[in-house]
Length: 365
Ligand code: IPM
Ligand code: MG
Image (cartoon, rainbow, N blue to C red; front, side, top):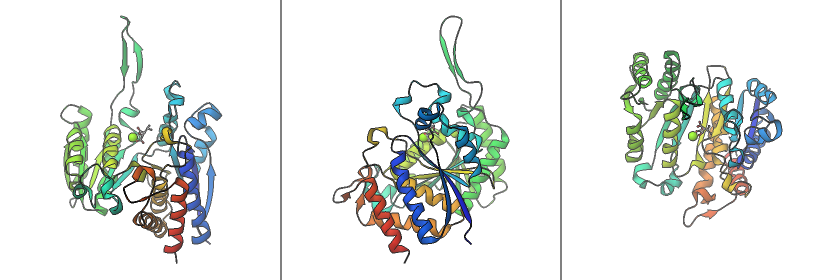
């Protein structure tokens, strides 16, 4: 009897539903061709949930997210909901999931596929073979720190406040994830903060250093976050694993992602403590400008499913199969609009999905 696997699909907004439909076809393929026993639930998140339930995540959806082995999320957000209060905005749905499921460790790989070396905005020799893992702290820092808000002062001036705050235990647990990750990779870890101006950054640096004592085989270095951004575009291949806080991780992961040619390619995982839930999602956003046109790139979502197979479902063979199928399709010259290159064949979301399924068929023989 195959192990029972449960998944909650939250397609979300913009291109979310289109790319999730292709991931769904890959799940169906895994069920029919690899005998995986998936139970798939589906619900709304973000603006789509706000429109239906009046809030960006229903209580049922949250309960289901806590129940299942993993959540696969498409994307949230869009200008349609710009006027909505922060706590009901599409993005809040995502933040609630991260916080409620205690998904403190965000793994964001930035890998440059051979077939896409020329799609990067950097010179091919700088990005060819690029393979960076950003470990972003996801449930703390300025995203959640109190106090926060906008107040009006007695003199009528308005004041906006957010608080950057980290405790030692929050730093320790994310540092351990990063050191463990480095141990499985090239053994090099760069920790980023702004210890030159922020006490929370100094604490981060000191506490990461302390954890490093338990990992004598990992080479730990510290870098100021602004310098890290600069080094990422100057010489990205110097990096193996980067560990950083919630806000710097948000910024640096977008920079790293773009080095690879397209945000449309990159998956991510948000993990909690051992045995707790997990959420997988593409790094890109909801891209409202191209939503509904059938041109979005489904690869990041399909690769997020592959990450789920590897990290949550213990199905490394199937994860590898999906990654190989994606490489095969790219090597065959098919491109969605975001990664289009001269001489290649531009295809729709659905045709990219079809082609990945065909590649799965042929690799599975
Ligand atoms: C990300 C996104 C989110 C973030 C938004 C949508 C809340 O930019 O996952 O990188 O800022 O964390
Ligand atoms: Mg971001």
